[in-house]
Amino acid sequence: MAESLSPSPGDDGPDLDALGVSGEDIRNFALGGLTRRLEIIGVPLETVF
Image (tube, one colour):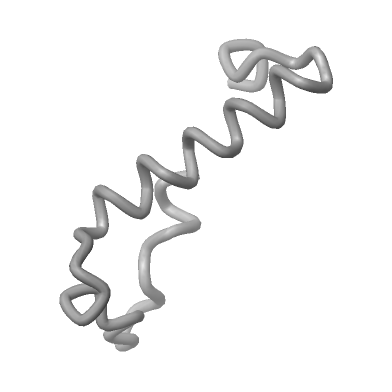
């Protein structure tokens, strides 16, 4: 999942400084959302790997 949130090679990606967040902040937010959604449907994140 972390790899899918990385910018493409040669792509600067979004200007996170302008948003006032780091790439780690974005990844943690995305992981939290994914974890909550998986728990709702009864598939704990640990079982996906």
